[in-house]
Image 1 (spheres, rainbow, N blue to C red):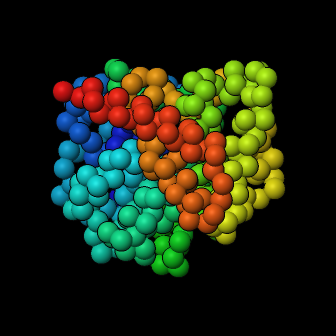
Image 2: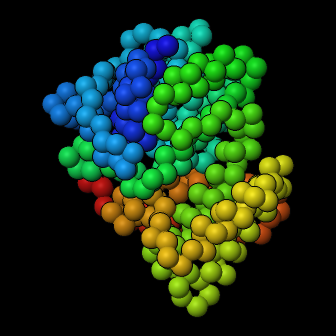
Length: 307
């Protein structure tokens, strides 16, 4: 099976690297700067599960079809990503997006057809540093994937076989859209809270009213998922509630790190989409809407600062 990762940043570099380490045939479609880094220094990953230094098969332009194309770009780069992978998508190619949120699924379905787009998500605190090193920031490295259409089952099984020897916490799901909705609930809660309060979970919850604030955000997101027919499962909600109210946690959303750097964020793809879905179902989103406003002001500043 020939696998193409669009991107070799944090998510793509890590999971693509683990598949390579396990013997899979992996290539990376990257921009010129990242191509130069990979050619000069190879794919470098630091992780509690074992560092990697691997020679990467990297390309800057796709010219032939692959069996599986894994999208790991930022949500705001989706249009250019779809154009870039066009030549890599043949008659039997399956696409697995690992983007945050859910809006991209509708876009990919329209562009390539729902029969080509399987479901996928990951939980992994990770970043790409200025020297091109993928730095895994915690023990969490979970990958969940599954078929959305019967014809995708063969590819899902092949991916599971490729991952079997890999140092990854992976799961083949029979309810992938439910899994994706549950992650959407958690991620939106975490992003809204840590961006609005400009601090990690523990710092928020150690303040008077902080725990109630995070619980209220989680409740708004869960109410929207429920209205959409994907009520988070009780055990999942219990786990999420524990994570977003942990007074010892130094966890913050990657969106909060982007915001702190003065960079563009995925606000519309995550908070914007969640608020829009809530409005369509008549769900009150007072706190989410406040966080969305805060981030939109940030986005305006970022846009104004561009030369």
